[in-house]
Length: 476
Ligand SMILES: Nc1ncnc2c1ncn2[C@@H]1O[C@H](COP(=O)(O)OP(=O)(O)OP(=O)(O)O)[C@@H](O)[C@H]1O
Image (tube, rainbow, N blue to C red; front, side, top):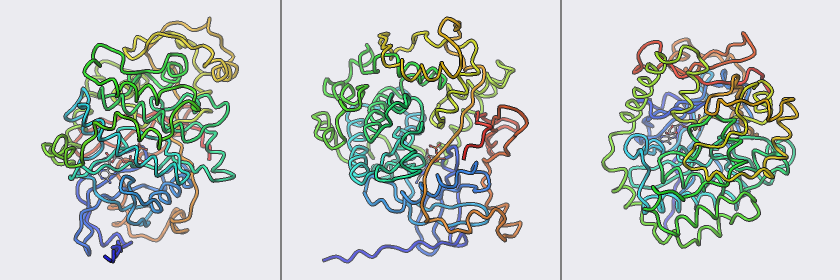
């Protein structure tokens, strides 16, 4: 019998050499790095704990989930430790990056069906495992499906995951509104009866469409509109002219996932048996089809950032006002827009002229209305806002006048050392500088709304930064 000796990754920053940046999320920057004693390339996710919006429980939970999971399709952390005021999470390096990244750089119209089938099957294996162990991922999307140089797939980012077996705070988190709007199941938005792991199946269906088209349905709309369209319209599907290239079984798979009633959606385990997955191939096939010809991840990341910076420059010329600029960032990709119901209610309360009921010009919309679906949830929002449908006038694809969003993550756990959260740990200035992730910005409490300036990278023209709306209200 082979004895598998688990490698012990050091928990000291001195044992790692950070190379280039390969990813950036709402809360973290990810670097390619070398683990010096093991001579192994890893990815290190760096989170600045001083700037985490008091969301330390969320971070603890993410790290804990990443440490305890053990499945080839789930990204597992090798170790984590604090250095200065930063948390470093050391994990396997996924040289292909995320599927979203790959689509943005090389497949803007989406992947071919055998590639999609293979990606989805591997992702589904991760969901079967997570659901079996009581976890709801809550943020399944192409941006969280990572691929390595051998074509192996891992589902990442447990920042908003929840555990079905928890009581207390974590249980309550399943009645909260977390995730990313385009991928979010109607019952998560509705907040009527809570939700369970079937919410991941909806997101999985949306991810299938994302991989097929290069973007998620409704991705060009602001969050409030996505919410309304998801609740009002018939579920999106592969029903359009451009979808003729896809097989009947793919269409059936998507339809099965995107049923509004969660009880009628299949479990991950049942879905695994769907005949669509007969089209799935090997990891090797994925490596050959979508990874082998790509530039190194860091280079692609830099190019995408530069492209985004260009877009912002153009937009800046077009739009003077920051709300409009934020809208443009939204159009570029809303993957990082996590927010909660209270924020949405606040949005609704502030919106005077938002075209609430306007139907989609979106090609994914079937145009069918489902008012029954909206009654409960929107009733709640509208009551709060004291607004009725008649007051809405058409600004159908513009960002609501005031968008208040909060990136909020929920969790608990104890893998992070206690001292991690004392804000001023003894650390030399030099250390501080080198450990400080560059993308975090100071919060601004100067008004009812806050927008966060994301970092200007070295590669961005000076003064260009993406803007992300964030809630002023600290809800922890
Ligand atoms: N292990 C890894 N190997 C290679 N690239 C990675 C790895 N982990 C993350 N990335 C890249 O970094 C990006 C940001 O990472 P991640 O999603 O974990 O950050 P986050 O702040 O939690 O994001 P989110 O905005 O989804 O909340 C990913 O989309 C991916 O492109």
